[in-house]
Image (cartoon, rainbow, N blue to C red; front, side):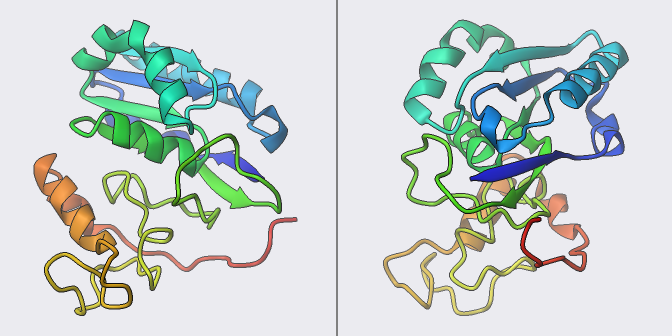
Amino acid sequence: MLITALKSIEEFRAIADMKTVIVSCEGCKEVYFPEIEAKLLYGELTAMSPDIKVIYLDYVCNPENLAVQTSSHLESIGLANKMLVFSCGVGVQSVCEMFPSTHVFAGCDTLALPGAQGVTPLEVDCAGCGQCYLNYTGGICPIALCSKSLINGQCGGCKDGKCEVDHEMDCAWALIYSRLEELELLHNLNYEAKLRNYAPSP
């Protein structure tokens, strides 16, 4: 099970003048999604720009479900420069995979609790590490997808795009670099890796 905490409004101000679709996951109510606070935040964001639209979906962590639910919103999504997803990290990664040519932002940080994670069939899930890096890494998680959970780039052991720990596994940082290059967002790699709190969630 996961707990989500909203990122600060300051992290979203940069997109207020852009055409953005906000995706609000209404699925896992049991994971303490801060619904009231989120809707207040949506109101503040949409007041900043008429080009910001909000769509409410359920269980965006499930790709098949996500495809069905977004089918009626494809016009708005196609016009958007960015998508801002308020869900756990699993949902953000699902949206990134579904819309690879769109810059996808995480609206929440995710903390871990014991138990199942939503209804996702994804093999790679969210580590619930508390400080989500998906906004910097193109929606590809360096914690869950890197064998060494590196947050500051490749280890130097990557060969032909494969991990030195598991030669059948794609190097997460090779994937991150390729995706950011495709989105013309390589400057995102200049982010500051902050000290992290690895204590278990209360």
